[in-house]
Length: 451
Image (cartoon, rainbow, N blue to C red; front, side, top):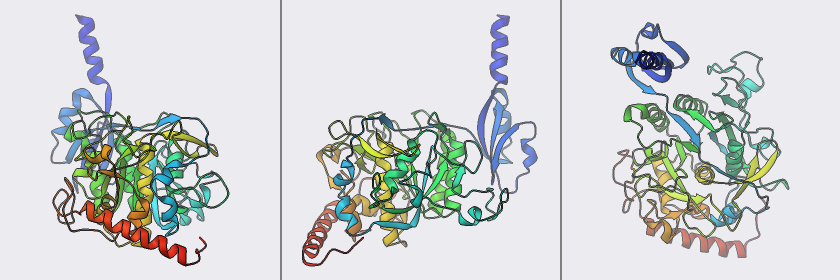
């Protein structure tokens, strides 16, 4: 009996990580007596013994909330056969879209992941650089953004300015968004020219935390990103709303600044309407979140892919065509094949960068509606994702649809984060086909412009 009591006391005194959000103007001394691990703005990551959590929560005059630091993980499924074939680009009509535009460099795309191999031969020319810091003095915060020497981004895992990828996942994602195209090297990204911001929150084991996600989103938004790719998410159906609040805060902050977040739906083959995955499942609540499932080479929903008629928006290549998954750049200046919704998500993030580079004034809601209006419909997706289809890059670039018509299920509008408005999927497809036919006729008649 004494042993059981001792074990209970030990468990109660063992610290767990919680995210504390201080109220505006709150006295920071309210955290005295607790181990503060990290801080930014009005957030703090605090180690709190389980037996003292209730006492901290009781200080409601100082804190808006106290939330468990939820763990996040990457969604990729590694596969290493090396076949030089980017079948995913053909599936989304990228070849024809590249005749319209190859340059997304006006738009910064933040890859929040395991980092990026920013020295990779097929990425280094498309990596975002914080020039003030790159050209500034060592060990000095030259641009005053609170991060010293953040030339290529930031590593929130190790709290340093070197977001190099020590796992591979983030580099693979970055290559799908923006590996340099038409350079006789390696592979081509959805965007041949791009600016990819490396933001590391997942360690070499592919896991990270809600606090680092929250920090990373603020960093990306505050440093100019217009698109954020998050090929990661929760893997627990029973996370409380209180514990989700830091992730929600991150999404709301991005939404308040007009920033699009593209999120992987998950790889459990389950229904996100029943078992939500965050941040992807915030799609039904916020107009700036786009949730992405995976399809195989035939356009059918991948067997591993999560889905959700109300919480997953569209699909993109992330599975297999025969024995081949998705080929992209990899850490260590190499290339490999990986499958997963993590790999589908950056196809859509690249598409968002394409759309915004041609029309930067578009709001997240209008970008989202354009993407969902221009998908290629497939029977395997009609009852699985809101749009009923998978990404069509050419149609998304050609589409003039941004609002009006019949709403998708749970469609977001400018007036409400979960209200009506939206678009008509049939009209979007029809308009896109007409525009595509006109484009092909003109392409026959006119000399092809060099890219």
